[in-house]
Image (cartoon, rainbow, N blue to C red; front, side, top):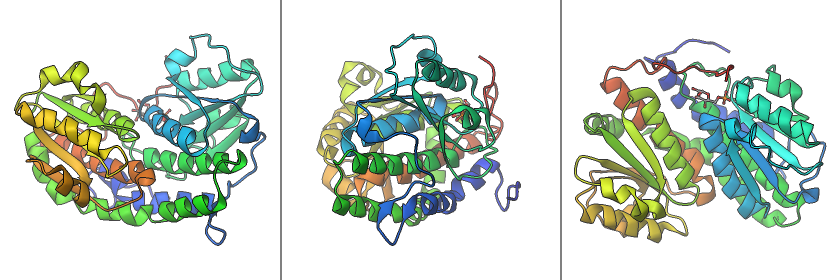
Length: 368
Ligand code: G6P
């Protein structure tokens, strides 16, 4: 694996652009194409059929991958998920059922809090499953089972390709869990696998919005605050969008569940606050449209990250619409990671920030 920037100005740009390839590689590792089903690289030492719930812990971007996965496990596998940031999970003294499962997600496999939460779960007699990018890491060694993300070395401090590969592995795992629990039919699994294997192509499509995003970045760069909104799996994507932007551009950004708009953030809205709405055309799209109307009525400037059908249906004046390809909403988080990352990247580059080495941040937080 070559560690250089290739034709890119920054590692972060290179890592964003290589996502179709690395997500494709990860998928090839987890999907049996001929049978149209998920096939984990190794059997797990437990069955999801025996679990009544799972706990997920992680930090930063990996935590948001876990938050997306919560929606997938609950909907696809009918498995309740409890999730917390590792720095809380390790000290909360939560009662964890012996024989239950704690899932930890980490790019580096070395994050101190995530490792401590894994050790806590082990101490409670739980199975631990690590979704990690560095196979030789401490978490990979200590977890009772490991599912690798095959993103390759990630150099940019702000996680990008590791995140989309984490999502890919977690969606495959949710399908596996759904099958083991007898709640996902073979036909439904095949349909979802078919949707999954289109993802690398869809991500390549999404990258084509880069020119549009570069222009938009000049507008975002003027803002003091940016609000990200989303519902369902687009809610954790809104959180991740806000995190990416603040990490590398130092613009204050907040992610909110769109339905919470009325409970606070609406007070901030005026023409100086760009509102980035992550809204694939899914079952709750209409609800998000009514939130966008509330924003528009207060002079807010909306940047819609959605598909053509949704944009037409919403029929709103937006500052910009980043048109994503049509897709099965289940896989939307993986594809929508691309515009979210590109918005942060181009805003920070336009502002002259050091995107690969943002101030005060470390790639891997190995101390508390
Ligand atoms: C740091 C990095 C983030 C990363 C987080 C968790 O804050 O800057 O990009 O998401 O740690 O790291 P991990 O290696 O556990 O995924």
